[in-house]
Length: 106
Image (cartoon, rainbow, N blue to C red; front, side, top):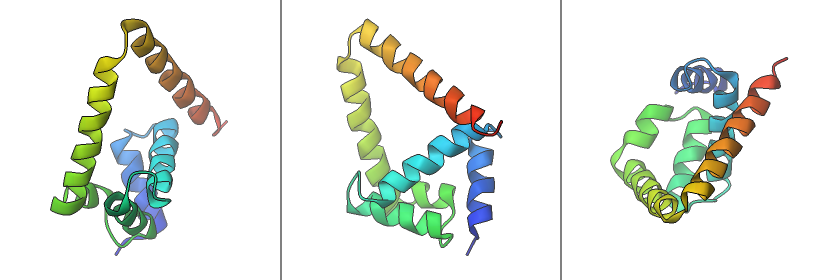
């Protein structure tokens, strides 16, 4: 079992120490824990956020990993249907969000 601090340290490691990325990852886990992507990922996110399961182990495991892979595949399919302009706008929006989240430490 891990602690909430361990979860943040693991998210920091995944985000290479960038506070905006850590906040984005935590926010994504919180949305998953609320059920945004179905029961399997809800359970995985709840286990991770509670400290009962490590981030990497939880998302790489057979059941949760398969659900995550399926969700990422659907995202990629939707992304590939976007026009180049829509993709550019989505990337810029993501950059702005990360910048804003990183600035919350200041």
